[in-house]
Image 1 (cartoon, one colour):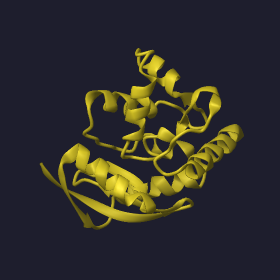
Image 2 (tube, one colour):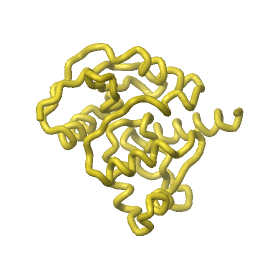
Image 3 (cartoon, one colour):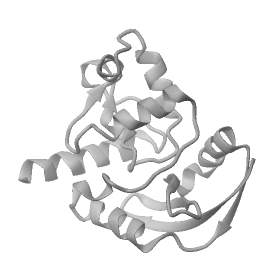
Length: 172
């Protein structure tokens, strides 16, 4: 497969991010500039050979990302996303989008929610392979006992995102 995706650099409070979209206007990847190698690896694992051309992402997507960071926590919920991944990964990623902003869930809790109570590690691996950071909110999954564990963009970003959502969710 030789997909061509558009890459735009987008400013966020967490640093410059790469927003990758396809010709249909679906988000294929969203990751931080300092994690470019990770993003490229995930795209390669999902799609094989991928060509990224610099260009503009759909305005609505960029506006919604900006709105999320300025306090509209639900702005990302309906963004169109597409992933390849395995059937299990896609199942996990769909479940991530159902965790409300301001809430967290453990890896084990997510596995139970999926009807796979012994699959916490597999859920963690699928979570870590999520190519669409923030929009597919893998940052809302935490370790047992509330420990902040692993995040593709670094724990400081995960902590920021959880604090951002928690503070704003309390205001609602």
